[in-house]
Amino acid sequence: MIEADPAPAAPHDDPTATCDPGFAVYVHWPFCLSKCPYCDFNSHVRAGGIDETRYLAAFRSEIAHRAALTPGRAVRSIFFGGGTPSLMAPATVAGIIDAIAARWPIEPGAEITLEANPTSVEAGRFRGYRDAGVNRLSVGVQALADADLEALGRRHTVEEALAAVRLAASLFPRFTFDLIYGRSGQSLASWRAELARALDLAGDHISLYQLTVEPDTAFERLRDAGKLVLPDEDESLAFFRATREMTEARGLPAYEVSNHARPGAESRHNLVYWRYGEYAGIGPGAHGRIVTDRGRLAQACERRPEAWLARVEAEGFGLVEDQPLSPEEQGDEFLLMGLRLAEGVDPRRFAALSGRTLDVGRLEGLIGDGFLERDSSGRIRVTSLGAPLLDTVVADVAA
Ligand SMILES: C[S@@+](CC[C@H](N)C(=O)[O-])C[C@H]1O[C@@H](n2cnc3c(N)ncnc32)[C@H](O)[C@@H]1O
Ligand code: SF4
Image (tube, rainbow, N blue to C red; front, side, top):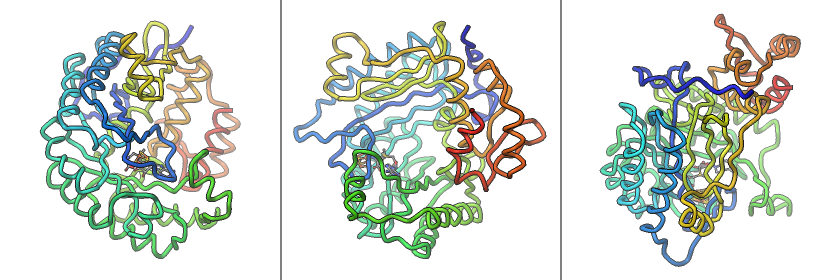
C-alpha cells in the first residue's frame, strides 16, 4: 500500500517549521518577449498578442479542478513563475489570486511571489502587482555587466535592473533577485566584485545560480561548436566556494544549493518543494505533487500553451500526466529534494514514504568521508565538502 503523507496540519506561527511541509500553488505563465540562449524552461515567444481573458478563464478552470482534489488544505504560498509573469496584466494576476482564494483557505501571512524581468516597461507594472496581492517580487537580474547581459540575450541593462530592484524594495514587503555566475570570460575576481555589489543591493534573500548548459539550447550549440568557453571544474568549484564564503559573511548563508537568505527569510514556496510538501501546478507545463486517496500523485500539464488552452477548454483541466508514485519513487524524490537543503532530511520521513530504511553502511561511509553529517536529532545533511558533489552524494544515499 502507498504511504500517504499525514494530512496537512493547521496553520501555525512558524510557517517555515520543518514539521509541516505545507501546501503551495504554482502558476506558470509560459510567454517571453524573446528566448534567452541558456534557457530550457517552458517559455514561448508569440508575435501576436496573448488573449489574457481566455487564459484567465482556463486558469480558473484548472484551479477549480485541483481544489476539488485537495479539500482541507490551506495555501501557504502562491508562486507566479515562467516564462515571464511580469508580462501579465496586473488584472490577470489579481483574477488568478482571487480564484485561488475562492477555492482554498489562505494561511495567514501567506507568501505570494511573482517572477519579474527588469525592463523599464515591466517595472511600470510592479505597483499593479502589489495592488493585486503579490507580496514578494523575484527579479531576474542575471548579471551586473552590460556586455554579459547582452551575451545572455537579456533585454535589459544594468541600470534598468538596479532601478527595478530598488523599486521592488520600495513597493513590496519582501523581494529577491537572481544572478547567474560562471559565465563565459568571467574571472573569479570579477565575480567577487559583482557579488559584493549585489550583496549591497540585496535585502534578505538572493538566488545565485551557476550557469548550466542545458540540452537543446543555443548555448549548447555554441559550446559544442567551440564558440562558448565556460569555467572548468576547478574554476567552477572556486566560484562556488567564493559564493558560499561571501554570502555567509554577509549574513545570507545558503539554505539551499543556490538560494541564500537571512534565517527566517527563506522562500516559503521553494521550501514546500524541497521539504516534499504538496503543491498544485497550474498552467502550461506546470508540475504538481498532491496526495489523494490514490496516493502521492505526480502531475504535469500539457506544455504547449495553445494545446493546454484547448485541453482545458474541452475537459476543464490540462493534465497529461497524473499517476501515483511508488514508495521507492517517493523516497528517491524526497532525498533528491531534501538533501539540497542545509537543514537536510529526517530519515524517519524517508522510511515512512519509501517503506525502507537508509543503508546504514553507506551512510556511515559518507559520514566518515566527510560528505554527510548527522545532527543530535538524527537528521542527515550534506556538508560543505559534499555540497559541490551533491548529485553523486544523493545517488549514493538513495542506492
Ligand atoms: C526560468 S527563469 C524565469 C525568470 C525570468 N523569466 C527571468 O528570466 O528572469 C528563473 C531563473 O533561473 C535561472 N536560470 C535559468 N536558466 C539557467 C541556466 N541555464 N543556468 C543557470 N541559471 C539559469 C535564472 O537566474 C532565472 O532568473
Ligand atoms: S530566462 Fe526567463 S526571459 Fe529568458 S527565455 Fe527563460 S524564462 Fe524567458
